[in-house]
Length: 390
Ligand code: NZQ
Ligand code: ZN
Image (cartoon, rainbow, N blue to C red; front, side, top):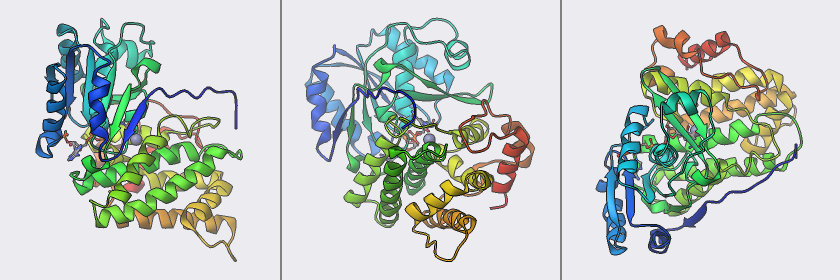
């Protein structure tokens, strides 16, 4: 394990098909004014909204709703939410939805009592939040981001065509998250598989970095095997509780800081993917899927040993009679086969990308140093162009 580190995750998890019952007890810890944040309406169609409202009312809370949080939430919408929270003296935020709702809620929590231009202060200048924050909890309905147990949030500035993340301090982690795998049954297949690949990509971003022998890598190989196994089942039968519950639990642990400890990490696929969403509004997990094979093909020559380990330990590639490079490459072939099998988008044209925006997208906000090769902007453009041939 590299370096010196602290592991402290304050989010309490309630897991299982009865987990929403725990909301009753949790609400007793907070004041009367609750801001209920949700997305475009899926929670009204699947009944989760009614269940949550009943619990809030039974507990005598004043409910202030902020709905319509879109996928890839925008700065403009966030400014509306900040206003609602400040004007109504909100005591507690309840986020009911996926990563977008959860991320947005964290930003309302942190920025409701911040003044000035929050985009400049926090997303561009990386100021640390020093004002009062509002406690929040999450009822998760879409699996993938890990937002339910971390302090990250990603916001899109549509005017600047930038999608940037921010990492908050310990008080903006959700106080609790409620994870009921049955709440994910109503997800359209496109969203389910996008979320599955988001989980895998979070693992890859932390796995494909450096060469040390690290416990986290062994844990991640196990998580990948579980996700691959469960995804194949969930794609055929979306209401398979065992598969959906395994996917949900893995998602949380893939990005709650646990497997990043004592390791270097990459995050370049996310940078390349965020740029696509900033230009086209594409679904997060699909942007990652569509650039991953070209990206990892570019990395492979610089890390044959690691890609060989991945091929054998994750994809069961038989190494007998093959060179290290052949084994490593076969791992990526198996990965691509699996991605196509579960229905991921492999070509960025299917996400609305056209040739004329490729060079602009390649001007990503940050080029990360943690991968096996630090990319140039030209190489990022090559990755986009290769995806357009897949
Ligand atoms: O808006 P509604 O109507 O609720 O519909 C949503 C949305 O259209 C729908 N949905 C959610 N739960 C459902 C459901 N539909 C039917 N049944 C359900 N149970 O699914 C769609 C996608 O939801 P969204 O929250 O946008 O997806 P996701 O969870 O993938 O979140 C994506 C956002 O999270 C950020 C992404 O960049 C993106 O902005 N990320 C956050 C991270 C973090 N906080 O650590 C890390 C990630 O890498 C990621 O960047
Ligand atoms: Zn992600």
